[in-house]
Image (tube, rainbow, N blue to C red; front, top):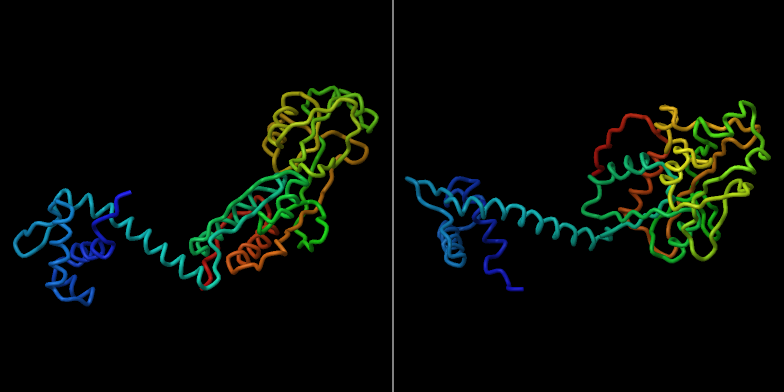
Length: 308
C-alpha cells in the first residue's frame, strides 16, 4: 500500500483555515505563524495536485474538490484522535475489548440496556458478545476466551454473582391434543407426545436439563426454532416466558395446565475470568449488567450519563 503524501497535521491545518475563516485566524488558533499555515496549505495542494482553496476578496474559500476532500478528512482526523485516545486509555490499563458469553435463554432486553449504558462510558472499548446454550457457556469461560459469562449453571471453581431468575413455562399450540384433554395434565400424559428440546452447545460434557420423559423427542439448535416448531403444533416445550410473550398474547401458544412443574425459574449467575485481572471497562460493564438485571423487562429505558 502506498504511503499517504499528506499528513494528518496538514489536514488539521486546512480544517482550521476553513473553520476559523482565514490564514491569520487559523494561525492564532493553532499558535503558529501565518506563513507556516500558508506554506502548509500550499504544500498540500502541490502534493495532491488539486487546488483546495481560492481567494475570494480577502477570504480563502474552498474549491469544489477542496470541499469534498475536507469533508472526508474530518472523519479521518476524528478516527486518528480516537485511536490516540484509545492508546492512552490502554496505557492506563483500559481494555481494548471485553469478551462476554451469555446463555441464549438470558433476556436480551437486559443485555441491550446494559450495553447501551456501557457505550458512552466505553472509551472505544469493544464488546465481543457470544451466545451459547447450557454448558457451552461454561466451556467458553474455562477455555479462557471470555472475560465475563452469564449462565444458569453452577460452574465448578468459580464464584458467580447471582442474577435474577428466568421463568420457563411448558407450552403447546392451543389445538395440541394435550390442550384438547381439557383437564389438568400429568407427566404421564406428556410421555406419549413429542417434546421439543434445545441442544446444549457444549462439546465436552453436554447436559440435559429439565423434564425429558417423552418417548419421542426432537432436538433443535435454538430457542427461537423451538418456539417456531411448538407454535406450529409440533410438540410441546419449556420455553422462556420473555421469549414467547407475543405468541402467548396472540394465542399462538398456550401454557399447559400441568399438575406440577409447569413453570420453573432457574437462577442465572454472572461469572468473571479468574485467570485475568479485570480492567476498568470490564468492571463498569459488570456493574451495568447487575444494575439492569434487576430492572423489569418492560420498564422504560434511559441510559445513565457517563461517569467522570
